[in-house]
Image (cartoon, rainbow, N blue to C red; front, side, top):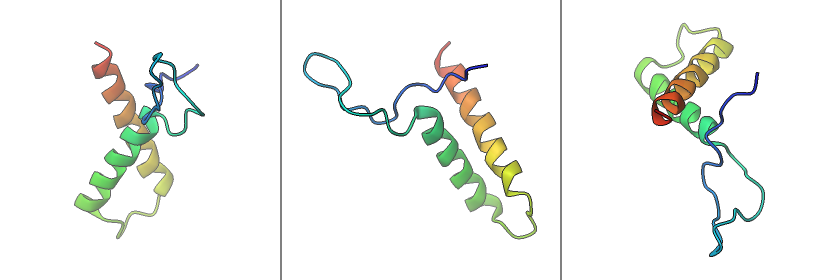
Length: 71
């Protein structure tokens, strides 16, 4: 299953409307990073041993954000 990544987060668009260079960070990665940052600022890391779970929740939030954006 191929996840919708939302495309590049910071594309370099040329005058002919093509993307120049590599895609770099995807919008999905950017959303996940923002979601994880907000969660860690709110709850912190103390007592939270499973960092994979935190990362997984961040990507679930990113997927929900992309799905809502695509409506």
